[in-house]
View 1 (cartoon, rainbow, N blue to C red):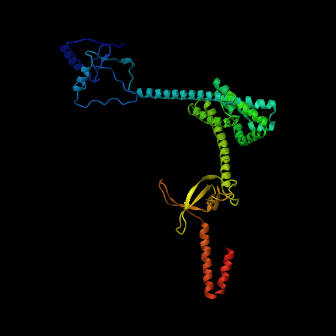
View 2: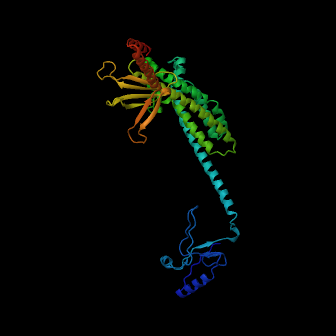
View 3: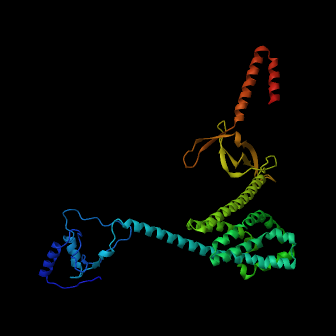
Length: 441
């Protein structure tokens, strides 16, 4: 038991008691107060100060200094009520040896880590289930107020209806089954069933562009469908959202699945049976996510190629080519070879060519907002060197050279030699040689 003692003493008796306590202090416990027979240790006056876990213990006092004496301690003792002590009971039977302390600390750290994993896993699973319910509610709006009613009324043909909505009903069924297993805590069986329907997301992404085109076409041509769509979107359940905003929901949810399942995998012990199922699910979801991302990248690249093709005047330069990827564009200043003024040109960088273009005349009737192509540089024949501007500051100079220039120099050199040899023999043959060379070039 812990015991505290309070007693008032006279100054003389207090000094005698202090001197006797100092003399009776055990050398095995320096700095402690007098030990009672019951095991109570009287500490320094004032409340006990316990540092946070992990912090190093206080440094010992230098040799030759008293721990309980000195002016600071006297000032501290004067600020405390006389005769107040803090007691700390140490049970000798429950004391741990120094050799068993690291083992217990390590065991506690492992248990704490497992507890943190379990808390993160529970929090992620709860968030997954909550967002799954919201996702199913939004999909149910499309299926209830559009797909089901349109099938019953026959406003759209079955082929048009299939083009616009695609495998939306199958995606809803797969997510609904996953939510039921999550509610029951059966994550493993739910993931096995969910992995069987992952290919539907890839097919849905491939059909999304055509679905948007068909939807716009029906809104423009089909008057009854236009009225029906506007009426359904004004319902309070849609909260101001249009049908075009709800169609990409499955692909957005696929991206969320990837992060949720990855977090669950990171906070699951490898010894459990669910770890292997989670690892398989994360791998499958990542593969389908890359498939969908490639579809979007190709679609965006096609739009960029088409935009650049429309910016260039005429059809002489073919930008729309299979396998070509758009990288970047921007205005650069071209340095002329003979010290003329700098010429601003628009450059379009692709995966295989570099196009230099200049703006058309602003007073042109048809092409005032277009660009005229000046040069096309094949990148597999170009070599680019940085002349200056190696730092991240503004400005710099790049040198683009082509191997064809070297071949032209050799041809001109051979032609000059041929002309000089003709001059030495007959002057008439010089004109013939120049004519032949001009025809060859």
